[in-house]
Image 1 (cartoon, helix red, strand yellow):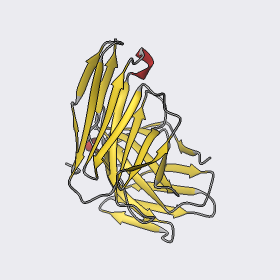
Image 2 (cartoon, one colour):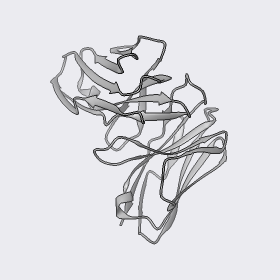
Image 3 (spheres, chains in turn red, cyan):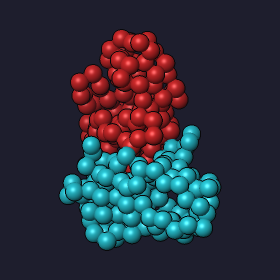
Image 4 (spheres, each protein chain N blue to C red):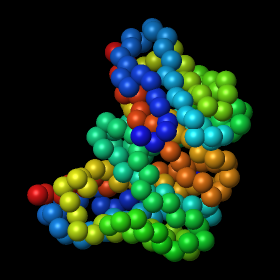
Length: 111
Length: 113
């Protein structure tokens, strides 16, 4: 069964710093990987989707990379802002239309 | 707004009650999902529907009963729940196939007393 791990579990940085969130998965047979943001008590907002054939995707200050063979993805956030404070989740899509999620990284950006 | 709407947003129910959660999307998606999110745990997939047919039941207790009357609507019927069933229940939808992304609703915060 696919297992997804996110490190670190929590991260606190001063405003303006660049940061990297990590996601690893045990089975490289994935169709795609998706990064989400979740604010407290809310649903998930999709940030970036990387297909299994792609190496990276960019959206504004966010850049996500994928190394499928090693089972790793990173989410890079440039020039962090207090509004970036949230929990960031990664999920991999496998056969049968199933998505497996990590436990998330809780990010706090200090003004 | 993601295009996936869940109601109610909050629900408190007793262990002997029967209630239903509703999920609706008009994104043209044919796959719909129920997830459970408990504190400090990864999202747990509960059910998957493709084209109104249930294709996955992830060993969910029978006190949770899903219903998918059409591709736009998904329900989760609840009865005789336990306090440990208190969680955030999230609905998602996607196009079927390998290349598509999931869109999530805002969730229903369920408290069983």
